[in-house]
Image (cartoon, rainbow, N blue to C red):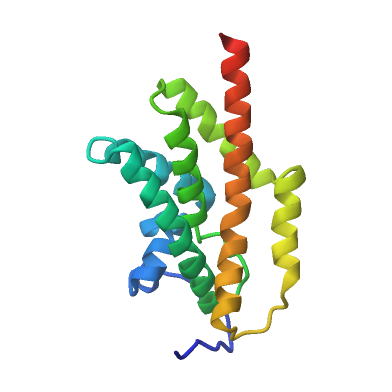
Length: 185
């Protein structure tokens, strides 16, 4: 397998993102190309896709998609970050998509206000990265240097690092949502 080498970082464009399936997935089917707040755009895309998917997929289907999507994300997020020459490029939003689907699968069915609350809480945890979320994020970003190209293991590990802090944000979102449910009733 030939891994890319770069003399200068790649600037993702619509054409570049849609040249390969991995880039398309990593960039959330284009939502990560948003010039402002790509993580928020990716999370909004995840929310809309989930609501549409509810008409066609069962909870079990979604759980399989989330599990498979996490494993796929370790590869595509790591590989695309390798192509971009950056550890965790903001336009890579597959991590937000999988993590927010995980939030939604646990809180649904619920009203639009609870969904919006989950969205806001998740975005807060993902953007601010307080406490353990920030520790996880810093741990994975500090593990490796900026040397490229990487081995397949390093690409998967980098992808795991990109994905795992969003899983932590999902966990804390679900914790807050559970507390809200306890105190609102």
